[in-house]
Image 1 (cartoon, rainbow, N blue to C red):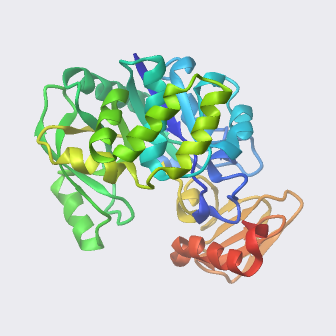
Image 2 (image 1 turned 45 degrees about the horizontal axis):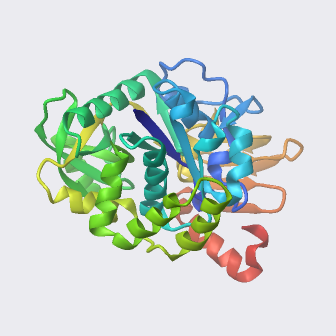
Length: 380
């Protein structure tokens, strides 16, 4: 049977001070409800300030419901977010919520989910998707995900990654190079995975037509992931086997709390995909031709905000002779006023005001570390 899991445990530190440790970006209502048509482009994801909004997590769940029934959709998140996830997703089956007691990177999060899914469905095919993407139109996403499942049916031991057709020479994403075709239209063998390139290299990738952005979304059999962990990360495989060997309920939760913090911290890319990619034809890439926005930074979030002149704005704001700014206020009674400001991020929350050049927005995570060093977790 086909299943899918939304990975929703991230802390979203590059969207600080809006995203906080106790309420990260995937749980914030930052995507407007006014986009009702699936046939929209990225430029159409422009928002009415003050309109209704929903979370990235709710959007990811609704997107998967275009492919699967709710009872086959799982969510993996940090235990401290459990109540907020339940509130955000009233259609989520309570038995499909996977709670990590601590963060041990994606190999263990994916492995834990795969183990629990395989426990209820030993032949499960499992898609792994992210909670922090905006994808339009949904119909094309659903079709590409269906194609990836079809590829898995044709090659049961394969690991299928979804590759986004690039629209620009982006330097902030990893890439995957298409190899030879497969028996499934729209799916190729993955010839190589490459890290974030410099600008000139990215321009070459775009011009070649051979490269796709690595979306970080995958489709594979749950047992295939567990087998790969057994081969390449045996400590995690053994620990996860101990967890699912315990009866579901309080005893399993207790074993999870004991075992999970001891597992080696490593990403699923290094633990599973890289070793598998050494086997010819084992890793495949399905072409996902959509408008895709990874909402991982302030410039990315700006793509979803209302355009006021040359500024991207959410909340009460007045600007004079200003341009290229990202202005965000979550207080409907607080006005942010700018004069003569260029290319800056200005964020106001109840307890933090943050200002930085747009070009330095990737350093917000570093800034948060400095704040924590000076003030502890008070503003985290």
